[in-house]
Image (cartoon, each protein chain N blue to C red):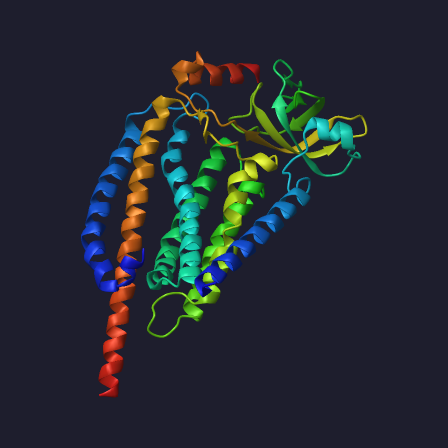
Amino acid sequence: MHRFANPARFLKIARPLTAWLFWPGLILLLAGAGCGLFVTPADYLQGDTVRILYIHVPAAWLGMGGWTGIAVAALMQLVWRHPLAAVAGRAIAMPGAFFTAICLVTGSIWGRPTWGTWWEWDGRMTSMLVLFFLYLGYIALANASARQGSGGVSPVTAIFGLVGAINIPIINRSVVWWNSLHQGPSITLRGSSIDTALLWPLGFTLAGFTLLFAAIVLMRMRAILAQNKIEARMQRLARG
Amino acid sequence: MKAKHQRLILAVVALLALIGAGLLAASALKDEAAYFYAPNDVKTKGVEPGKAIRLGGMVVKGSLKRASDGVTIHFDVTDGKATVPASFKGITPDLFREGSGVVAEGAFDAGGTFQATNLLAKHDERYMPRELEGMSYDEKTHKMKAER
């Protein structure tokens, strides 16, 4: 990974990779959403309401995946002192928070017609809301403790990212450990209890959103590195 | 030992301590963080009448009865180990039906019947097309309406 510690080398790969992630991601997402809306049959119990699944599940996956990325970046920053890891942590935070919010909002909209409530304080919903607040805390801490010229997050922010990762397995297990209003996991290592006829567009939207997420993170990393360059140049100019 | 390895060991030890603390907290919260009482919890732990709780379980097939006033329903809630009677007055969620999950908010009366003030429908993790279920959605809805 230290081969990419040099921003110039990283940028040389990241620039074309962004497009290669963005456009296939967008096509997969649109195909999945279209098929999920118009091609798949309705659920036997929920009818057409089930179609919100194709957005809700990828949003939850990326909200949790985003924080996992923050934790991995934090570990690389703290242990290996990788200069780009700190930049990656900052770049992931905003899209991660965004997808967590989408997950909470779509879940709420889904809960009203099926469960009969917008919001309940059960284990799954509460732990997901905690994840959203962790993201807000991380973003605030990253902005407050930004180091001049590095563009990355401070070590304190990285430690916060690492500690907050404890919430990820809690979210995952919340419907297993505690009885909850949210149903148990549909997709496990043993298979899926979502029938194949309803499942396949989920693969499209999952892959599509994930590629888009990666493209957004790369764009943000490039923007932060570009900002660094500008600041360094301005400082040189100021010194004359 | 290189400084890098020292930091790695420190990070791993800190993470292990964190996971241990998280697991301890989760197991301590086991009862507190439960969203509802199952009928068997009610039987084994005992819930005094009048205490506001949530009761969750499956609506026993064939137990759903509508009182003569047209808005009060009586049904049994089971978790496979124990069964308790419940009643509710008001509009039920669309997904509330026999053989499906329910979470009822309310309290037990002196007679041991759960008087629900609010009903939430709980569905399971299975999703499938209507054809596979053997009965179409509309048929099912109409059947529910007929029972009411």
